[in-house]
Length: 417
Image 1 (cartoon, rainbow, N blue to C red):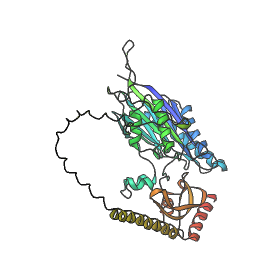
Image 2 (cartoon, helix red, strand yellow):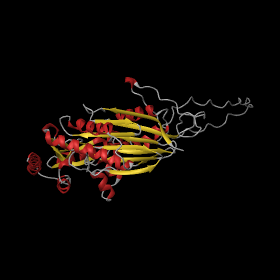
Image 3 (cartoon, rainbow, N blue to C red):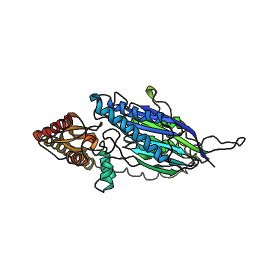
């Protein structure tokens, strides 16, 4: 029996820390796509718009679904590249792109960059794409653990995008589909804020795909909303012949009742509770009724139980004092480490992927303490550098101020030349 798209929902949001939205998405069954633009002077939104517009203009040129996706993506890449070469204000612009094409009983994907595709099946969320990013490559090589990758300052460096080069390598693959599958395409504004476990919780507790999309965006914003957030969801189901009773969309295929919708928070934002979040404590259980004791027979009063000796406060005071001294030592060490780090500089990238000069050392301490600060943001996209040079520049090597400044200036002159 053939599968059809029975529900879909798309949503994009600027986030909490951006002034413009450079994300775009395309939603026209059986084609879906998410693009995350990059580049200064609003060029990122131009690149992502060109990418999704190419899907709107596409025609069935024959070939397999994977070939069709690759053709569309490569055509978009060429348009973005040509514009960036002919228009100085768009120089260095680019975009990620992750697209899906539903056909028969399969879903084909086309992928460039670090936007992602997921499949939600049998209450489990499975990631279908691998990021084309420096951190992902280091993880595959075993040089970086997943825990280290979460706070690595190089997370924003992608190794493949549409626009920087006249040709692009499009990663394509096809997955067998199944009745009840839900597919999620999203930008890194979602995955950079929400762990996959939380994304799965929201999908399990959904009342509809539209509600799930809003809940994902709201949760990403509640956790900081550091980037634009885009979510695109669609669900597949077997086609049913006319006259056959069709059950309404269920949350997880089980008979368990749907969790109650979360109340609205102040300001109109909706707080969505996951399954692992415990419900509010219910009314305290009534204490068991005990029959009153019989009146005691006249007798001498029982001996009074001696009062337990008061706990010595001296030991407690020592513990409090030791904790306070430990905190003072830790704070002093952090302050000393921060001050010592101020003599160093290193070259990295900002969230937009531009070469940036930082003062300090590339490490984060607990409680959100960073040992570095931004000194200068260049106009050079890291992805525009040759691979070997990019790796040499973005190796987090500590430098003197003069050496670091000279390196950034040479990269700017290289781009202008």
